[in-house]
Image 1: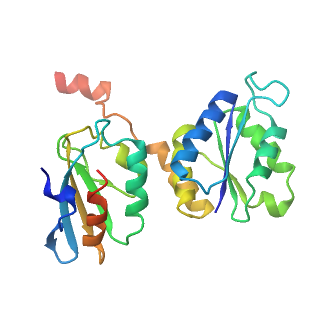
Image 2: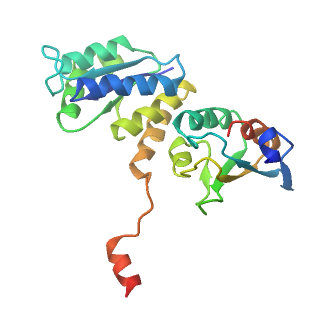
Length: 100
Length: 145
């Protein structure tokens, strides 16, 4: 089980930067309706937040953009790396991790 | 909060897209379809009077963003805007975004309370969003030797 998905504090990397990995649980993958919620939640934070689909070796995308989130093409079981930088980075990741 | 008008040659597309956009907005955003012709809804076409009616139904002081499919949809939208008084017309914008993707993005951002030009900018990003990664044929030929 992926610890980060349960909302365990994301790992601080450097200063105000934090990262966490999440596994997509939804059988339909990361679809439009879930992505909408991710954008809504992420947009409440100042931090710059990116996601990368490690299972596809995707590029890093901005999680505040639904167009870019869709480009992750994340299916159930895929592992995403979330990285956040900014004063509220840790809170942002905690709020986001539970959505996937 | 801005309003949205979805203009398509097809009544079915405009109505269906309206349903999709409503879900993305999470309520609170006024979104109106303007598809087909007034007299004969299921004949393909666009109609300035129908678009005007849609603009008025979602009118907000914050502005109205119009998403259109192509061709005469743009002309009919422009005609509809010409019927509006200056102060209303100046708060309307016809987007360059592709209709479906643009409506999804615009509804989401309008629902977050973003301003007219910011909502449009997010929607127009869809012009550059790739759906699949594909190596162009000319590059593929070279790499395959």
